[in-house]
Image (cartoon, rainbow, N blue to C red; front, side, top):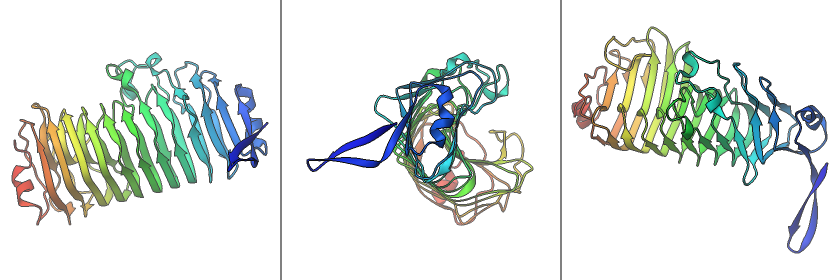
Length: 360
């Protein structure tokens, strides 16, 4: 146990809270049960195939990461870290690193085959803040927030740049079945969706940078899930497979409502700049979309940038009647030379966007 001491206006102030340091795995449970309000995970080596269990933290706990946290190698499903609680602060101290050393699992197949790869960090937090974390080289999915309420994630760096050749399915920020979650001022370098939301409401993705992955995604939608009131604003998507995307599953049911993409810059997108399609997992117009997932009140505004020559600037592929109440304005995406047919555009959509959909 260590008391936290700070200086305020020339006086020494001993705070009420104290800190407990965890640098051995067998200290974790005692730290969670203690009366210390600050738990510091410091230079910890997590055994292979074992969960770093930081669940059910006491309300008001601050969980800090210091130094380098590493994990033993084993083929298993994970997750490698799970954090839960209410009124929690999770933060990284200067110079820390949560290192998955994912190259030990990467084989170019991701979750589709080859080695069994563990997911990395899962959060289940209410009325909480996650800030200033540096996460590197996860085997597959990086940072999942499920069943969360009133959660702020800010200044988090998810860095899987080393997986550029063999990393797959390394989704960045995944939000599901959650309410009032904001991800802001963060950076993702990965090999799948930078951000994805497959179920939830009042979700915000603000002022973030996405590099190398599949862009900013809603979906994939199915299983009667609902996504509503989701905003992606003031973001950059760079050298990614797609730019912004809504994907709904073929022959499935769900609802997408009140989604906004605003002030998004795209650079060197490989396949689709703006894509909304109802035939996932296909990403080509080779089979018809189905009508089980309405997409209502979609706003796309001030989306601009470049697509590589082999890709398409925009592509909409929906069953008739699925889309309604869309507002599209100031979309200027260029460079793609692939012409694709578009279908299912709603009545009243911007004429310029409608005429250019799927065209050069």
